[in-house]
Image (cartoon, rainbow, N blue to C red; front, top):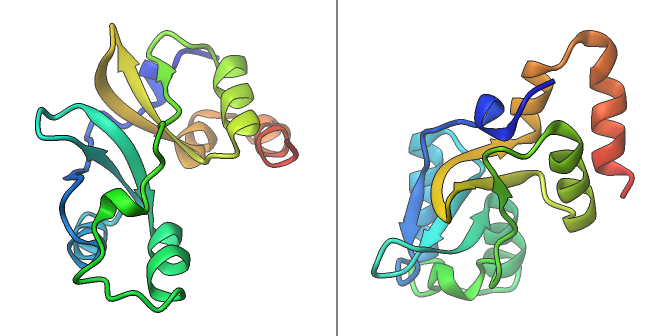
Length: 138
């Protein structure tokens, strides 16, 4: 079916690790995305923060989003996939790691983001059910 580089969205929405959750939420809203890649001072990927992380890890826990840094909620070791990974490897990685979005790297450099929705768009109608089932069941 193809490789991660063919399915991914090359537009990467990121946020510095020291930024606050309220800023992350606004950036997600403005970019119409459900996750941001968290970067360090040098622009290196250090985590991923999702809309769910904001709700469960900050707001529902009674923390002030204006005082809560994204680094406190972001995955400490983000799961990534290589740009040349095939569909089977992508699905296996998503299922095993229980993630629905994967940063895509090429030679260690961030080149895009790949979500379940991107895979569904690339799949045929007959493949969609099987594809989503493999990701969700793990």
